[in-house]
Image 1 (cartoon, rainbow, N blue to C red):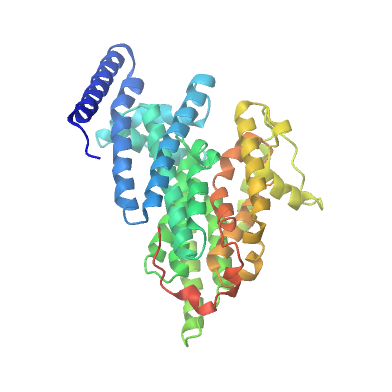
Image 2: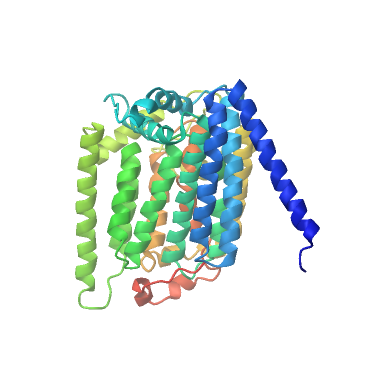
Length: 446
């Protein structure tokens, strides 16, 4: 039906009213509020429009349903960003790591704009790097915490998109629509990595690394670049996370079947050598830049152990079961995947997290026919081996963290790869696919 002229006039009038209202709000804020408020009113619409344009450019290459999922996913992400901001700055009056990064960046961004890059070595490496990243953001947006939240939340959003691309590239027979709906709209992924902080940055580079793994397993030439960028971006903030990702890649490459062609074995060994060399170079450069003396396995264990000891405090603390206990490993999986349970929740945030945990538990049970054959598919689908190894390593590494709030934030860095196992084909088709299919060039569907 053709639109009537009055319809066009009504839309134009509504648009003019919105523009006038926004102009009045901006004028009021500039006269009565600090830059952290009115600056956000200028920077945030620009950031949102840039992301909307990028979504349109990226999603138009896929099926129409993915554009809808991505658009609704970004709108939901903006809601999660707003909620995260209100909780941190209204409910908790600026308490949290985000305020530390905000204060540092607000004090130094003007110097950066003038070309005087200030950096004082010392302190914990991940915190220092986030201070520098936040200062870079503020050099562009100005010192507005909400604008910073939108920038970091958008980085996390694109990390999720890259995780979707990795899934669709490596597993063309899987349920892409189911995975997209879960990974773009899961509440904890919308909420936790939506502030100025490490989780948003890390989720972006977990996505880059996962896409690099998918390109490696489907023999695409960009795999080395993606893995290098992903590993470096992760190691800058949390070197032990980079170790978990590299370990998962090595395991998947070892299990990956060699092609039946004469150079198949040589290609597999060559991939392992290149990966090991890149990992060694990345580790050495990261250690030198960040001032870390020990990135060995023992050093990583000690770092995680130290961090675990700092978590057993606050209203959301609990007593983890040691891994030396026979029940330690299964309890660790239940804790990292599903807890807190509703009766363990001490506030609204943890109650919401507990409801999501019950949803994920129900999804695991309901998806039994999807993941029951995963063990037989590990040698045929290396991306499954990568995902499962990462999940297992993540659970064991963080099993002794004793605070539900901290675990909820860390869990979002693992959940997208858990969801891989819940979006496989209903029948055990993966186990029946011939080995040669693993190495074919895959055209990514929507």
